[in-house]
Length: 286
View 1 (cartoon, rainbow, N blue to C red):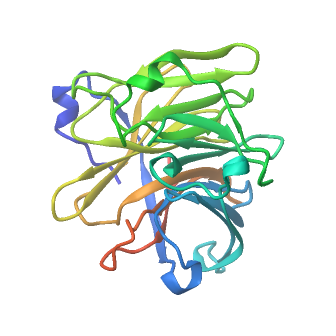
View 2: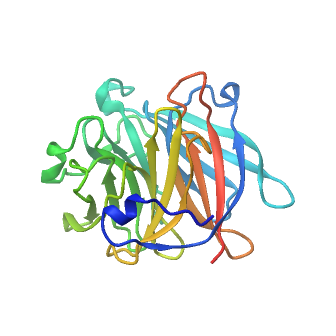
């Protein structure tokens, strides 16, 4: 799919464009997950299992059923639990808006929030969540548009990106947390057109993949861009028309049995009956 936004010509030099192939979509029925609002996604290296987080403080584990061509033909939920807030119990209210998810090499699960901007380690134990210290900029991020995307690098560093950058001509800051060194902003991503950040992952190739969304009034457009971990080598992998997919917010990047990089995405149904929770997959072909 080689599509290019005219906005790229307005907001700076046009990035490179790569070839991707649409593989398929699978709608996950409400009666199976009984929740919705899924905003983040992690997929195991073999593409068989996943973890997702809802934007109402709930974490769900699941397993994919795949056909002979490796396409998703079923989803089985294997675990589900609310995110807890220590002695305060189950998280509720504006502070419970969980949006990003990253699982590091040790299997630890990190969650980012956009209501009150923060990143925390979530062990699953009710009394043991641990918030990382906040970066000075977090308090200045826009309400309900804060830390939407979260990813972990090969060295264990965490990268988080707000949904909005402020002005339309301002790039998206990429915040990095390294143990013993705290937060910094090693680079930013150019903001191109009306797209806003919804998800991110660092792929098995060590590159940063960013999922973006634009709501066009009658439906959603989706875009995925790829960068080196210094913000260079911007490449557009796909950009869809309005209504091709639902509200894609979660992104996981992995390598399939054929050696190709695969993008698995998950939509947030916003708890509305006319939207759906769907898994969507593309494969990078060049």
